[in-house]
Amino acid sequence: MEWLHARGAIVFRFWNNDVLMETGTIMETIYLVFATSLRSTALTPGPSPACGRGEHSA
Image 1 (spheres, rainbow, N blue to C red):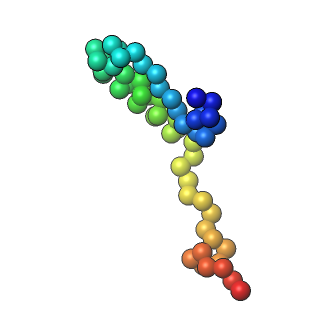
Image 2: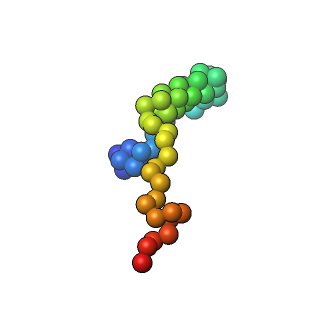
């Protein structure tokens, strides 16, 4: 699991019974984790290339 975390993955672990019987709660948990994660990361594009549309100057 550490390998996944090091690459930015989020790992969820739930009991099968909870997934089957408490699906709404599980979905809300997943939503809240992702909503919080998205708020903490900037969703801005990278800088424009220095040479037009990404062509390399000779």
